[in-house]
Image (cartoon, rainbow, N blue to C red):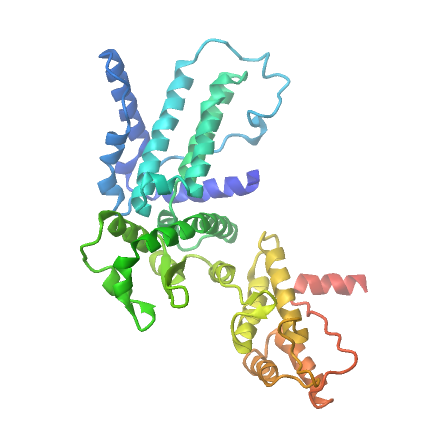
Length: 426
């Protein structure tokens, strides 16, 4: 992740935390933990364990509040522990152990335990399963980064800044998808929405396969709720005498925008992102182009050289991709990916593929392909892609829908800035 993108994530996280109730202030919680540690040391008792203290907050956390933590990224000129600083070993460095630095590192450890406990509870996963998620792995990496800071030969204020940055990254890593959805507010800027979308998808890609694996271990409990080839979610979530782990997991699935679909062929439950839930909880705060990106990202219509849907539905996706390319910011990191997908889909639409040609063996255009061209021309007349397909249709009409000897079709240019660039080069 580059520094610019991380700063954007922290800015978005900061805004969402500042809007939450003050009684969940994490600084106060960490301070209390530190006092208990100090008290335990004076009594020479065994080391204090943070889990009971952290667990006492879960009741509040389960109803939707999250701990507030003021975020502030350090000056980019300060660098990272791995970067060399010619003055660092000469200015302000001391071999003496800093109590302040040690206390801040202990705070980071306590914060990690606390946030991890919250994340597991919100996701409805036990520690063994949670340890397989990307949330856990990222947070572990950031904690290790913090723990090694004291060994580095840099000035104290530099180390303290790195610890602060590490704590912020721990916070960010352990935010669950449900927490992220709850943080979305109206008027979110496009680049903030892009950062949010990338982070949200990354976390969901890690969670969905784990939920599927766990669900299939409890098949005997959800199978009775399959009605007419579909899972009856209302019945499934009704009060049942489920095993505790299964009941807890169902809560995590519901609260983290996970949609369940029954696969009749495989006799399994499959997971995907519930965009209706995202829109409902956030009151449609996420810009529509990013909702569409999540939709297209998790449901491709072209696999192994064949459409996974009908030709008309594939045409709908083609038009959606055009909309997205027009609506995305010019510097969006998703643009190249979507442009490639658009070009591939359009090429398949007008030329076909090895496994799905658009012409019969006798050279005649297939009826479903002709119908799709006509469907797009009629329903999307204002789109650049539709204009191009009209020309394709007209060209085929002139030869009675038989494939010409030379069948060369170019992908239309649909972005205004790209059109201007082409005009300048001519």
